[in-house]
Length: 273
Image (cartoon, rainbow, N blue to C red; front, side):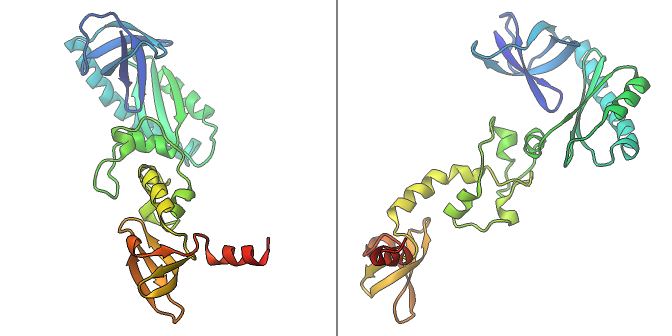
């Protein structure tokens, strides 16, 4: 059987284990390239997944107590590392850490605006602690995924709850949903455009096909006017009439005279390209 297990606060690993009744929530010890580590089983995977690590044993109560002691040691080592940052890499922001179960390796995760040279820091800490030290730079979205936070909706961020892959979110979605770019309302805690913009994309694209374009001519019971704005949620449009009046109308109350915006229509009629 293949098991997806945690590795500290930030990573997950796939472990091949015998079918001996291991279930979600159990702790197991597995072999890594540099020793042994411990992790909590969070999912049973189909055999199609690539296996990286091998099962060693199920965790005993003593192993769990050792894991808790290592968590306290992680806090201590993070403090010691942070004290050295002003000397070696002041622009590095530590956001996670993990000591391997056998105590042979400690790994730190950090955020930084650019690529850093941390070789001197690794050399100093390795000598000080007599163990292998690694650093891994992560992106803003990986940080948001690993540390549960709450979004503008008041719920935990999607990436920390259930999203496994990040889809590209572009400003095209902002224009489609008539949202202003550069505001805090459209960015997540990672500083990137919010993933939930993607959830509503299909709705807005379908609605866009039903509505006349902004700038196109329509007929209403009040006469002929030009579409100035569209609201896909309420299915209404704002129309400007030749005398300067503006009024709202439901989508079902208008009849398109031209589906093209007037600027494009005029160029077409005049033969301008």
